[in-house]
Amino acid sequence: MTTAQTSPELDVSPTPLALLLLGREADPRSERGVECPGDLPSPSDPDLVERARAAKEKLGEKVFVLGHHYQRDEVIQFADVTGDSFKLAKDAAARPEAEYIVFCGVHFMAESADILTSDDQKVVLPDLAAGCSMADMATAEQVAECWDVLTEAGVAEQVVPVSYMNSSADIKAFTGKHGGTICTSSNAKRALDWAFEQGEKVLFLPDQHLGRNTAVRDMGMSLEDCVLYNPHKPNGGLTAEELRAAKMILWRGHCSVHGRFSLDSVNDVRERIPGVNVLVHPECKHEVVAAADYVGSTEYIINTLEAAPAGSKWAIGTELNLVRRLANRFADQGKEIVFLDKTVCFCSTMNRIDLPHLVWALESLAEGNLVNRIEVDKETESFAKLALERMLALPVTAAVHA
Image (cartoon, rainbow, N blue to C red; front, side, top):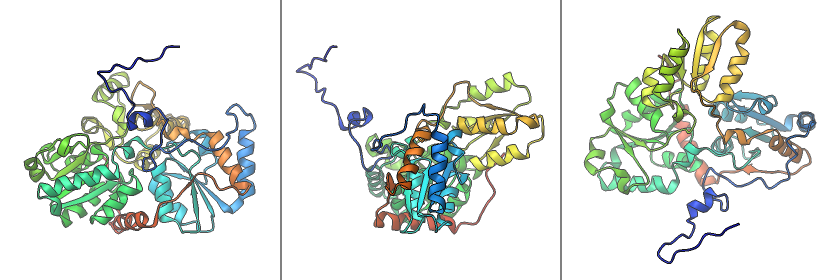
């Protein structure tokens, strides 16, 4: 074993970010979370399924298990309801008799559930390290600095923040405090329509692709109407003139799964499978969305495949767990469903919620031990709920589609 030699000319002390990435430190205001404090059952334990079932039965109506569409099959089988993040949070709020809400998803989703449920309900995330890389790309400190930049450019009073559901409670609270709203991938256009009724510009957080695709594809703006704010550059890498000219100020964030799909992926699958329908999520890059046949939220993707004729062919640009589940579900109808990219790509943080973590959480609760509770402080909750309530007041619209 060798040790690195420290050069007197170089400062090689590990930075806080480096320590965080190495797993040696934790940022309490980050989606990355911390390691699980309990002893997990072995993943090779053949009794895990029975243990999960027994613990869930012992808890009875005291527990309500939510399963996001991107979860593993081994976990989703124990979900009382499945869906996207906002649907699940609303489902939890509609079950006030459930003392424990076990959220099989990622950190920001559990935060949203805590915001929308009563004070008597306790939200549990089986693995606190199940975060979201997209949500991590916009911290409260970075967004506050961005607002200072907008203020110095003389445009802050014209800007309405719109934050994607895939953001931390801190970002949702910032949005509520500054007169903005939250959106999902299904109602992003309606949220932007509302925002432009309130102001002249929108700061869209944290997913640049959903913001750009909605503005250009669904609202008729040009790519020149959009600028990209990079929190790692001075003034976001933008001049005051660029900020004054822009309609959409997009945050430099993206989904690590949907961002992988490329125009080459679309061209390749069309060549390999003649007659294939390309169906992608609006978190994909603009050129991918422009080349697709259908574009929409996770629920839209599921509904489209349900309504598709037998024998039809589909290439899906979204998370692999869901694509595989849909392929198996519709195989007996002769529907050919493939993953858009040749490279296998699961959402790594979603996949942190596995059967050992779920068993540990359920058994702990069954024994009277509250573990891995996700609790948003009251001030943050108040402003975040304000932003969510503005979204709930928006008219219901159909999912985005081609």
